[in-house]
Image 1: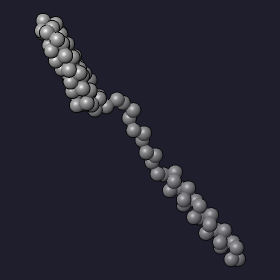
Image 2 (image 1 turned 30 degrees about the vertical axis):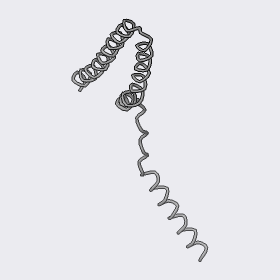
Image 3 (image 1 turned 90 degrees about the vertical axis):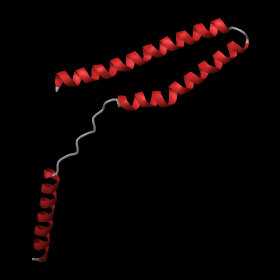
Image 4 (image 1 turned 180 degrees about the vertical axis):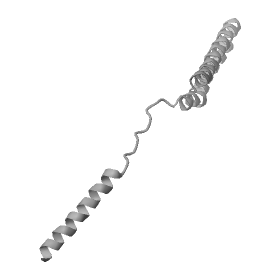
Length: 104
């Protein structure tokens, strides 16, 4: 009798456990996308200052050798390049805004 009561109690406990596990929703996987804001802020805070410092050292080195015209030309090219980069970043954010506007 004791063995039968134990078997029924164990069977009931296993059934309840299986029912609880079956009714528990599974966690949804995290979306796998690129954090574009994080990438842009990383480049703006880490990479861009290093590149500007390297350009500054090159310009100072050329200016100390008397190549002022080359320094001015390189500076103008660097400024135009930064303007293109800023324009591309602006288009990136405007495009994101337009996509959100159209598809939402």
